[in-house]
Image (cartoon, rainbow, N blue to C red; front, side, top):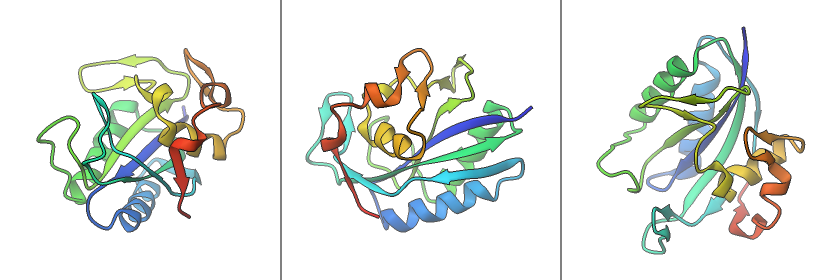
Length: 163
């Protein structure tokens, strides 16, 4: 059985736009994964548990929608491998990063394990996830929260289109 998956990509260290493009290509090359769409790239302020952090470098963000036969756990493992290939270091939860790949939705599944929560628990607060996702799917629904266009209604000014 295939699942339609929304993946958020972000980077605020290194060659951010190149990293996002290369990561999107690597996601598309995963066995059992078919890329359906990539959003444009967006710039956003770094967000930490205390809100926007002007001291951290800005992020480049995008969303990729895929269809996969992989389980959510297996897909997460493959995405973590891609992050590691780009030098991702996990020293602190809200630290700057060379690449961050998050599963936002996995079909309509609700998943809660030690390593994965889907839908992503903070997606509804993140313009850098919702605006690129909305670009790809104007009828998108964040399970448990509603239509993405309604959730993101007042968020467009929080991101800037790069490409």
